[in-house]
Length: 214
Image (cartoon, rainbow, N blue to C red; front, side):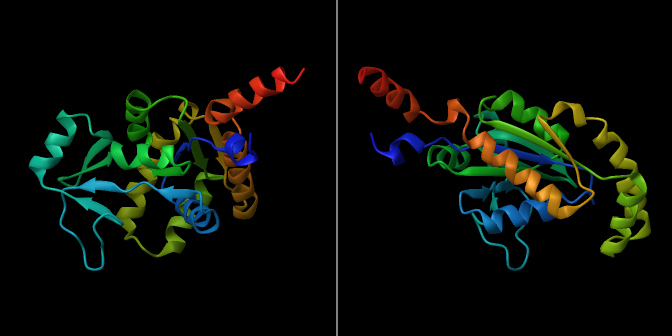
């Protein structure tokens, strides 16, 4: 049996959650840039495309009617309403990626994660929560980004307490005090999860052949 057949594996669903400003987006983008076996989940949305956005790359743009149909036919792993528009994760492309041995990253909140736990296989899910080293550091990061108004910063800080309270629902929790160290920890988690027995279907046949060699 070839080594490629032994190492062939099913991909994993890497769910990343955190309060805004904890570093989740930076960590996700770096992993995507450096690891060819990692892809980003593409959401379906009912909002209109923005300049430069591409169908199938940034979002799948659908009508409200089509979105309701996707919900009724259980074509979505999770979905939510944000500012009067609907967003959701189509099941089909994720399933194809997992079968091809690709790891799919999901940038969703705790509510989306709970839906995923009900709609996806527990074996496929790897849930990671990113925490800031302190509330003060989180607020400082939000202000340094200079992307949000003062009112938005306050709103994000109010939301952070609710989001952080769900940390225990995740498999791994990383405190992002030092970005480089946290990124190395993230890579270690991904590497270890890839070697789980359940994700390596060729291993059973390999072990059977080993036993027959006696």
